[in-house]
Amino acid sequence: MELLSLPLGLFDFILTKLVPFVFVLTIVVFFHELGHFAVARWNRVKVEAFAVGFGPEIFGFNDKHATRWKLCAIPLGGYVKFLGDENASSKTDHAALERMTADERDGAFEDKAVWQRAAVVAAGPIANFILASVIYTGLFMYYGESTVAPIVGVVQENSAAEEAGFLVGDLIISIDEDPVAGFQDIARHTLVSSDEPLKFMVERDGKQFELIAIPRMTKRKDQFGNDFQTGLVGIGASNDTANIIVSPLGPVAAFLKGLDNIGLIVSRTYHFIRELVGGKQDASQLRGPLGIGQMTSQVATLGIIQLISLAAALSVSIGLMNLLPVPMLDGGHLLFYAVEAIRGKALAPQTQDIAFRIGLTCVLMMMLFATSNDIMRLLGLSG
Image 1 (cartoon, rainbow, N blue to C red):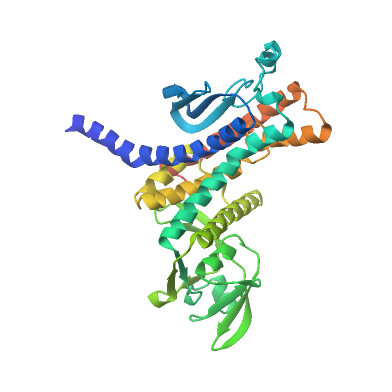
Image 2 (image 1 turned 135 degrees about the vertical axis):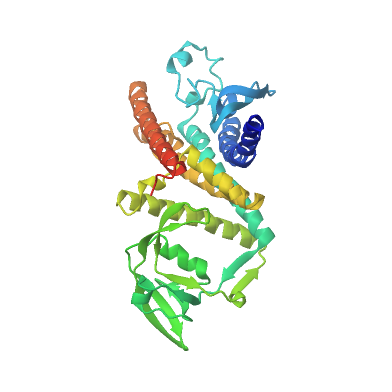
């Protein structure tokens, strides 16, 4: 029995944890790199390799343009290698370019105009946002939009809402003059506004008046038992199913709702970083590859639709991360191109090399920190 338990345990690990993680990350990485690839081809840049994953090649083929398409063993990212790149990080190999003849350099990424290089680099994160938009649009067209009427069904004891004077049955009309159509709109404000007063316009017994509540940063657990911190005022929706409205959405409305979802993720990410720097958020919430793997395996238990929705959210997050102005990331390259456009010439190779090394160090330190968080969380030692 013990001999059989290992293969069965390994099979369970692959099916319930590894497969969902690889499925989600492969989709997100493939479309990110496809953005770089497509715009590079449009600008006549020679693409030497298109890889999903890092490390040894598992499977690959060459297309008619001599581009090597390959799937690699370590599913933690990907890259597109252009003519003139030193390695998978897109660092320019200046020495190799100088040894090439003019004909050999035809199609070299470094020889393209600054706007063309910027377009190729920006296309990766943009492709992530497009992927998320397509997924969200499809989901909203299929399922429609569920709206929970903004009627207070629960007021928690000793909460900010109780102190502000909320009562069960209150109808929330607006928050800081922004109209409220459903309880989801309330969460938009409270989740990212801890310790900041919010002005609620409330209707009670046919009369409208203002209540001021200050969301408190509160530690909670999600449906899988994971700890997270969020701003809460302490109100809940009514359990009456009559207050839940499901509305079908056409293509345009679904697309706009998808953009709204993307904007919400961007806003929450910005506020999380701001509160992390300000000490309101716990840095232990940062997730690395192991944490993302754990999250995908948990969401996979809810079904394929939830897993695809997670792919959309991760696509937005990865697009945002890559736009950070850190050398080695897409945002760092865009920063170099902006400086080049202003100066009229590129930074010296030595300067770029130093910046690249600093950026690589920062990324590796952040990855190690996030991975240590993942390990602590898996061992049940965090929080």
